[in-house]
Length: 173
Image (cartoon, rainbow, N blue to C red; front, side):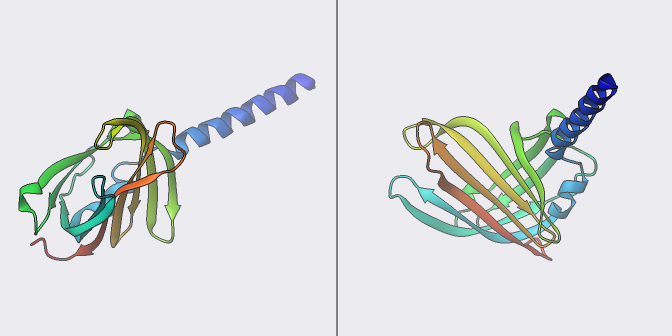
């Protein structure tokens, strides 16, 4: 009888571990289907030289990516066209990371949104200091935001490095 209880306990723990391990796994294309389309908004970033925030308009266009784990998007900045770019969100390691950053949080947010938070060790700042870098993605049907926060090694405070905030638009102009 004690062996059955131990076995039952071990199986329960294994089931709990597997559900926790898969909780932070992305589903393609389900988790990102709302991202396809045209978006208008802004980027606000911290200028490390002046230590003041700066905002400017931004737009994003995401093409249908089907079942691919690579989501290609075009960014445009009407007041600074030389900064326009095309980039990719890559879902890697069987859905456990985004752009090779480990997903630490994946949870529903509100009625129709998904919150994803990734973290990675890296380098940031004007003097290229080691830091923990956190990206928070909030994907909704009509809104999308990406926030980058930095915690320099040896510090406890997080610094908001930049934040994109978008609202869905009908026309991609």
